[in-house]
Image (cartoon, rainbow, N blue to C red; front, top):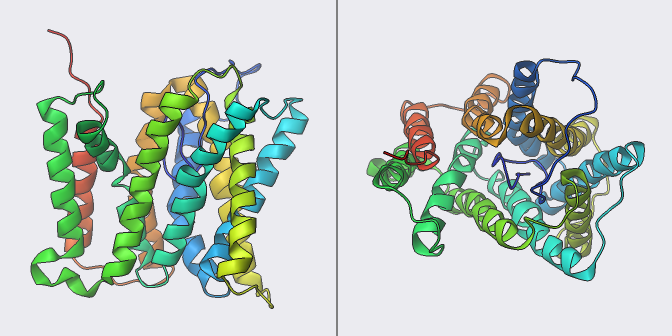
Length: 317
């Protein structure tokens, strides 16, 4: 669910740096599409929670991958594009699919068995913080400025505020919270991997992401029957939630993101990341009736400020 050029949660990861200009002017202004994308990704956590009511988390994720892949493959056919070629590319895509799709999608689904969708959405916003930490510890060619390091520290302080660390983590389930944070960290690992292995393949964003989601779906199809109970009933609301999670939150959302990156650039497109936890929180409280204490929105705001600082580049003097 993320892009190599615009790091936003839950979409298929675009793994090509090249893109083609749209052949015609989009019907909707980019600001409207930006808002729609924020809503889709913000509601994804609600869809996961509802899907978990009837299906095991691995099957929620498998359904998500299935419907998301279907959207991209149909788009490939309509636009007369092909899936990538070459064993090397497919090998790297398999790794990218694991870290950017199969693993984080599954972990978020498992996390929401025991934590509110609001908390999962806020944990997701920590992805830029993990990316910054990875740059500090591992990536020697991307040394951060003091401002970005300060943003990293501020962001993790925000996470502690959200969790209510001074009062025993406010009754939140520690395991579920850890799973959600690992999921957000998985995106950062995946972005770095994509950046180093798939940034210059010559294939389009759509082609690469279609192949990646297809591989992620295969990974889940192999794992789910072994480690989870196969569904025997299909209640309407959970089915519709999984359908929306995949078709909208993974398939359509990527297509919108792809268009935004093409039109306004990755920096503007990635700002959707900062709206997602706000919408996830509003949806969880208003629709699911989840409880919200003062430290959750305050901590979320601190996380977002820290994440924003980690994305700022030093300007030349």
